[in-house]
Amino acid sequence: MASVASKLYSDDVSLLVLLLDTNPFFWDTTSTTFSQFLSHVLAFLNAVLGLNQLNQVVVIATGYSSCDYIYDSSLTSNVGSESRGSGMPALFGSLLEKLEDFIGRDEELAKEDEHVDKIAPSLLSGSLSMALCYIQRVFRSGHLHPQPRILCLQGSPDGPEQYVAVMNSIFSAQRLMVPIDSCYIGTQNSAFLQQASYITGGVHHAPKQLDGLFQFLTTIFATDLHTRRFVQLPKPVGVDFRASCFCHKKTIDMGYVCSVCLSIFCEHHKKCSTCGSVFGQSKLDGANASSSVNDRKRKAPDS
View (spheres, rainbow, N blue to C red):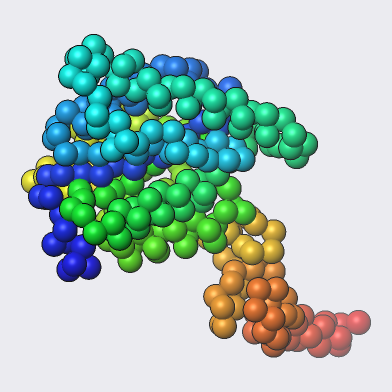
């Protein structure tokens, strides 16, 4: 990573990849409308771009069944000063158009799915993969680049079926030294985002009220990686390290782990469904069986 660090502009120049949760099933259940939420996000992005003229912002929309790039400030660097001075609608006009088109397409795909829960998870694994692909492309571009980081604005609940893909993305970000910041705006906290921020050295925060979301975003997530050394940021009180089983896609506290491929199961199996390894009898099951036999022997004289 020494070669990557040598290509940086300076310590205070950032590449912010924002993952925006647009799941319609989540926003239909919240008191805050998506338009109000979006106004805070656009003001935050405008503040990030205003902190340094070399800062870059990339926005990825995370829907229920799809995700897509909707804004890249490096592609709109030729916007004139009049457009920048006229306000955010001129600056983020393409973002709003692409976002509206994406939400329409994602809602159509969601209607085709007959097995949709009341509050379905968004495609976080896909947006994380797209963010890492973009950052990797920047690393390999050969030009000077800002310091990348990822910010997840998530409100949808975790999808246990995405556990493997999300954890692979988290470990890839850790290897690339890319911190994943997370701001969870849902009712229940996200174990995925807690683990992502903890493993990659990012910041996780779950604001109680969304009225002051812009203040939370600017005071916590607008700071670059160099400035964070001198700023008191929220520290994680407790991280939920629970995993999801590979057999039923459920979040579990205790389970069985394959010693070959480290797959996790909530029940004991004779064979690993991932790598095909054959398991022996579980010691726990053997202990339970022996205890039941001893109980029968003890009860035999009474009968």
